[in-house]
Length: 290
Image 1 (cartoon, helix red, strand yellow):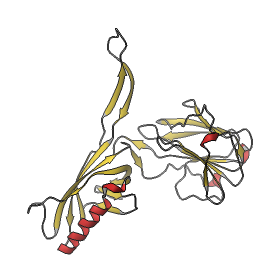
Image 2 (cartoon, one colour):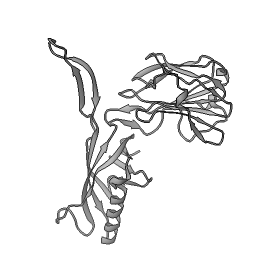
Image 3 (cartoon, helix red, strand yellow):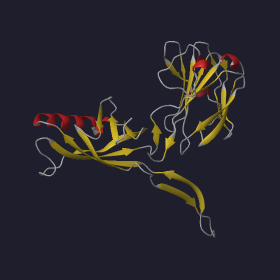
Image 4 (tube, helix red, strand yellow):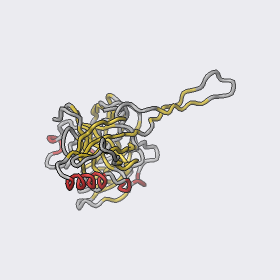
């Protein structure tokens, strides 16, 4: 648990750098972590007083970081400057920033907007120190938990093992369960069907939306559905871990729903085999600020 503010930046290559309370990378200021502005959409009809509200979209988030490199030798300073520039290379695309403070741990997707700048002058650099600033843009403005929601699924899943914390499973015919999205905004889900079933369907009764796949899933296969905006997918995974696109099997009335804030009543069923199928749902809560 970190009692002081600390951030870790991980680029698309898996390289990372941590800025905290001391050497070698001292975090001096981090701005942009709070609420971001909304873009209000309204329409106006002829002769209408005022306007009609449609929705509000949240803008991208900008994070500005001021830091200092603190070392003992000039050689170390050159090395740490080089590493900072390498990890924060704008050409590397999307990365992740992890924020930790007072036991809180949140993450956000980032791209480098302004690579590290190393100002000159005796107040900014010396034999054992160098000030720097850089700017990150967050395509999605929402912070997320650093973990997937877990509700104690081991007893339901049996011998299956997973590399991540798990969400909720279903193992009974026509099973319904309440999912609690503790975040500030709706959040996408990943849904995994294990075992043989025919035309599985999962419905968010709280919103009236459902996802149905018109396909027979074999005993040794998994059906994996992702509802993230811009990253929607429907895939069948075989026993060897090979995945095949199954988007064309989606029922045309399906909606790639998100969990709304608060409680969501979710139900699973199928045209056949549902009593032998296990269903896993997992998600990360999303927040407007840290």
